Structures are given as C-alpha cells and as structure tokens.
Image (cartoon, rainbow, N blue to C red):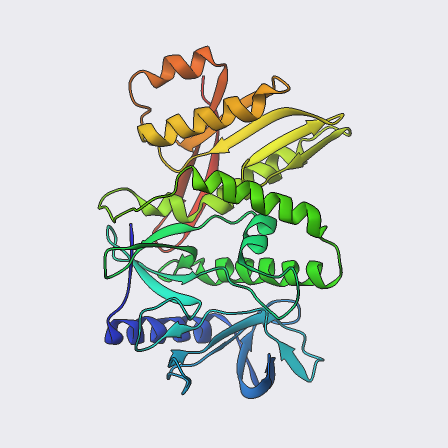
Length: 341
C-alpha cells in the first residue's frame, strides 16, 4: 500500500529527486514565460521539443497561504510567447492536507516513492472538474494511507525510481491537456458526461464506508492498471472488424460493440484475491448479461487463482488471460500473455 510522505525533510528529498529527474531527462529550453490563472512567471523550462511534455520544477517552497513546491507541466509550443499549464502537481511543503493537489507517497513494501495527484484539473470553465476528468480519461484512483490512519484516494502518476517515470508523467499531462481541449472545444457532450459521472458515483457508493490502512499486497500491478487497460483496448482495437467498435469506461475496462450490441466484455484485475475475483466475476456477468457477450478476465500471470474459482470461471464461460510486468525495477515492461487453456 502507499503511505503519504508527511515528514518535511522526506518531502524535500522527494522534491529534489523530482527536480533532478526532470533536469536529467529533458533538455533545458531556457527561461520561458509560463501563464496560469491570475498571472504568469518567468522560469526555466525543460522539454524534449515541440508537442512534448514541458516541466518547470521549483526546488524551494512558494511563499503562498499554504507553502508548496510548484510543479507545473504542459505541452510545449516553442513559438508561443507564454506556455500554457495543463496541470500543476504542487506538493505542500509544511502541511499534509489535500488543499494542494499533489503529494508524494511511499510504497510500504518496496520503499519506492510515487508522485501523486488528486485529479482536480480545474481551470475556471464549466465541465472541467475531477469527476468528469476521471470518467472521460478512464483513470482510476488508488488508496493512500495518511498519517492519521485515514484513507484518501489519488492518482499514481508514477514511481520516481522507475526509468519510465517521465514517460508516464507525459502520458498523464497529455490526458489532462486533451480533456481540457475537448471541453473548451465542445467535443464532450455535457449531458452524456454527467450521466457517466452519476453512474460512477452510484457504483462507488456500493463500496464506500470507513476504511483503514492495511499492509501487504503488491502495489506495482495496481499502479499500472491504466496502462494495462490501454494495452488491452489497443490490441483489441487493432484486431477489430469493420463493423466493430472498441470502448472502455469507468465501469467497464474494455468492451466491444457490433451492430449496437455488446459482444465482448473485459475486466482487468491487478490481483487474484477472493474479493477481487468475486467483484470481477460479478462485473463480467452483469455487463455481459443483456446481450450474452463473451467474457474475458485479465489477471497477473504469476498469481494462482484460489481454489474453487476455476470451476466457477469455467462454468460461466469466462476466458482468462494473463499479464506480467517484466524488465527490471528501473524499467518496467508490460506484457500480455496468450489466453490460458
């Protein structure tokens, strides 16, 4: 599980690490004017080039009502006089509340430090907000244990000890930028988006309640859930027939429609605990029932399904497929395995 890093010196160390990663990974574009709501500032900006991630990192706390490290990100447009911020992942330097959107959290199993964001991507325009963004971008939050024992949810941007961290950060910033652009251009149907938000909120209430932290469990798979979903969706999309469409939503990791009818439903789980499998089977059966769609369960290859579930999975005609994280701790590679027989 992830634990919020709350000690001031530990947060400073994590912030210094973030600044060094950015400096080592992205070339300096010199001092650039960076615009934000209510003003602008001139700061050194790092980016690989046009259309790529840009980052501007503060190594010292900003003098604001809530002192914070200022971590701004966007998509680089070198010809612009003022770069636009897609998202700020600021981290409070002296306090530990979530009034500021960013945080650092430590995996209590590996000691790895992750950059986190609460998903609040406001910008003063109607339709831009946390729930709408999470639904539209199909992003799931994970649990973070706070120092007082309470559980908060946040988006794991990436493991800062992972060589692929900057790529994962760029992927997240791109999702925020694309969402904001879609809202500003009117490409998202507000009524449909609101319906999806309400469906997700209703679904979440089924699992709400007071939760306390727990030890154990491998967090690496959980942090890569979104990318595993993206791989499954991309693979199925590449193999689609002319009359098939492939989607994913907050409620369904991946599904296929053909002639207006759902023909395949996929559920990706990052573990094979009994509760996870009960939930996965229930989701697959529920979402496939109306059209008798084919059901697929994607789980970690190296985990053994608990006794008794294999018979249920076979009886319900659920196809099981595995995924694995290969490579090294410094560079993770996600692989999808063939269907289990």
